[in-house]
Length: 229
Image (cartoon, rainbow, N blue to C red):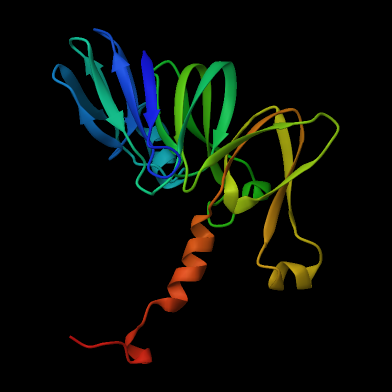
């Protein structure tokens, strides 16, 4: 299975080449196109309960699509928002991915939802993250460009929670406020995650929450006397 990510970082798309018999699992609605000989099957991957957890708590779709190459061909995927995509090869390890950033993966990987308690409250992302483990290819997307950061052992790396795409399970973290109550309310930063230990973090250069905070006050409503048709 080979791949090429194009149009980075603003409008990224991945084109995955499949040999005969190879398969790739993708989030519902992520497909852009595929060549002749590629067959798509939609199902509740991993069984009903796992799909239910992924849909209700992980922010992903209940059903996923499996693409099988009946002859050598390719299939292309893209995220719903403008932004970047990256490929990560798991080698019997685990990555935690925020809601909405999972795009596709090899069938060898286990994609499940895990409750992390209050410390995983990433802004509007909730208390659940996607837990992806095993050996195989993982494709992740973001709103904005993706930057990969390696944590230095013995040091702390602080990230605004709205900019986290994914992190390896070897990276431990705590969620806290920025400064005191005044800073939390007035700085525009809110909650941050302090990572320590070792491993990699994937960050996105833009935040959906920040976009909504900027956009919503500018949308007219009836009480504001918006333009009538």
